[in-house]
Length: 116
Image (cartoon, rainbow, N blue to C red; front, side, top):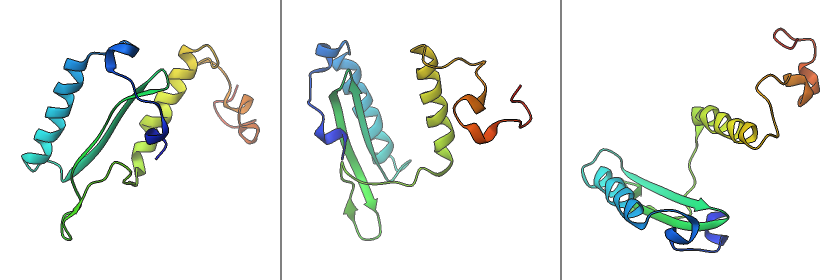
């Protein structure tokens, strides 16, 4: 729902390629059409502007409920790579260092192994 509230822009306006977005879209739809995945929701935003938001396939195959752009998913173990990406972005922005102690940000970790 958050992505739908972003202002939209053409990919080139934010330094992206429309041709690559079209390729991504056709690739994702191919995975649905070939039966590799039942459905998807994908979005791309850059510099606070939405350049791509698309859904295809089924949210519920049995009831033939089509996938919607605002579908919600359980991400389960995907939280680890998402958290890792967020940390790497903070490092890239200079707001965090790989050598920082965890306890610097989460005080309850003070004195635990590896927090030297």
